[in-house]
Length: 308
Image 1: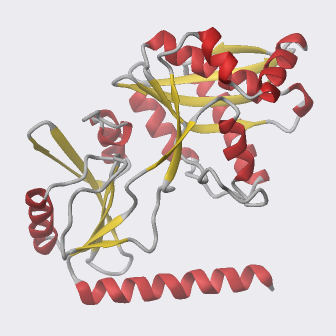
Image 2: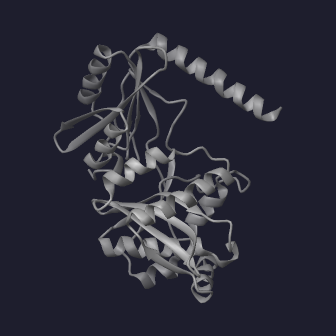
């Protein structure tokens, strides 16, 4: 079992520094790193186990017992596996997944020439266009590079009305993972930063997790060249695959809000991969039902409010 980024000791230490309760347990070759999040104005908590191996029945029972003793309503489990092999009466498919069920994976065992040939012809054209127009990509895995990345990231979240993590979160992640597994690439035109990625390399996999772009010079296709340089960085680091983090399924709706970045990733010859999904380990069934009802009503209210 490959140790996923979110299951790494590095990530766990960063979460602790955010003041988040963290539990790490090891069974054989597999580690299970969970975070626990308090429900405001109560003593109850929700647990989260992201991108681990699928827990065995023995592990599920251990987690259930821990939750019973610590006022945990349920634990959300989103394994880094394509199929779920474990069945339990306490386990139910989650109505509110955090990770998309689909991702896109790029096989990096091929040569750069083979990879380029596998790209969509428009992607190859855009990469060459950016190079021809003078876009340059630099690795800036230092504090200045992080600040450039953060500025572009928050410009993008504001522009796209996407509510990502705040600066405090990103700074803690950076401070704890820099010089270890975190890398920052920035695409420039005439010394103007146009796009930036924060990438993570661990155990043969490079992950594209966070990115940001500028509104300036969008016609220069800086993001296309940046992703190509991220792929080449992964190969230099020894990665065997590139995990693009999240995606729509292959037969996606072209007008879906996620269709743009799904198509962008697809242009690099990726493979669509369907993960096992999202499951809730119910520990307090009554409060679990109440939580889902409140969640549904909140989502309904926010959707209605946005339409007024």
